Image (cartoon, rainbow, N blue to C red):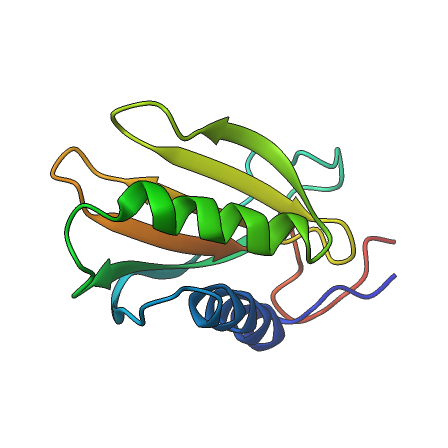
Length: 136
């Protein structure tokens, strides 16, 4: 089966991020934190090596202070109502973190609160061949 290409995976990650941000009651300024492809050294799917996980992460800047818990709750509700399953839910921790995976395309998303109280939102692809090749 053909995988997404690098460009297709980047675009899909961006789409997931844009949909999540659109669900927020206030719109943040997005500042790129990560935009890369990392080799799947230990593929979770037990597939062949040499494939990559494509990821994008943004800082969610210019959000009103004191609303992180509410915003993380909104993201989790958005994800669970749009075919994502929860992988980790640490909303009560000082370093708030929620991770989900889409049931259809296996993209993972997460929202993380830094020690300083800043939120970041990320999306990453399952392991793909950068040229969209097959696992055969």
